[in-house]
Image (cartoon, rainbow over all chains, first blue to last red; front, side, top):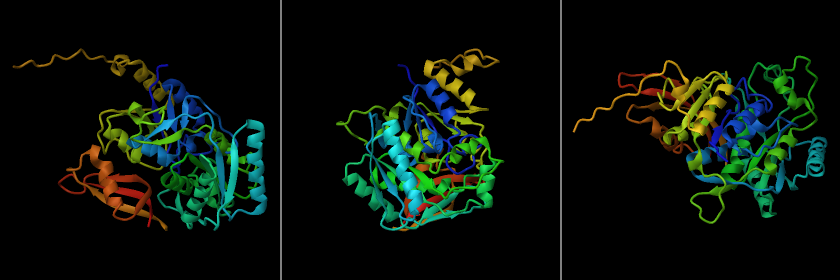
Length: 352
Length: 63
């Protein structure tokens, strides 16, 4: 089948109008996957609390590993299933823990996902959310070693992919949370969620994704539809387990022994919100001369091509246009042939 | 291991081509710690007559 492997990024915690909420870029991912035949994207795009989907044309790759893929350090290998282990933050109250364990059991019994085992961290992870005047969500965890040690324990038991559930401070009444739920702000916990999963990817090199454990939240009648997926049920774990259930294996390069499904040299394009050109995957793509498709998708950043002047960059108004460009690239259609006015071909000087 | 979240300002001289910018940033960040997450979050246009731009980088580092 003809494909044009494309990376699709919606950076976490910068308040993107599309993709800054609860899996609300998933329909866009399906569109781009259909156009490209092969899309590589990250959990922030695919995870909608209790809602998610599997798609044969989508590789689900955690952000840190996605950056490594863009840099050419790893390849991806399709698998039929992952054997998933779950790390639970020991700061989670028992009732919330039981709710999550029941979700895991449900994913086994109803969806047939291979959730193998779980471990509780020896110390609470101590999540610290930083409030930032620049409107970019960020934070750190106080006990990163407890997280990594728990992950090592699961891998020693034969687990091949890791879901992490961390206890987040109860800020359900905070101004930031309410603004986010009403569709006007940045997801306040998204930045530190990325740090948690990056730690597992960096130090343990397995597919992973994170779901926050939060106390049940008051009904908000002004809820924005884009945030609605997080209001279903008590946990956000189902989408993480669905995504990880057949996430590709990480293959360190160079490697001649593993059967590779997708090599980084096959990537042709990266789709990214306009203003968010400062991430590592985009800069790695620029190094390789890839097509960068910069889509108008309002967010907190203003790192645009005005500062780079990169020639292989297409600025488009929406993801429908982006899908059209990907289709043209896939089919080898000269993009200029579709635009007007159409310039005559140029004569090259032939001076001996 | 301890994590820290830092806002880091870096001058981007014209001698560093765009295709080398990522390596340039990484080499500077690695002096401060093991890099977990980073991104350019702001760029200011030339701040001197040589065309130097100023980058604001948000990073999480491990030490």
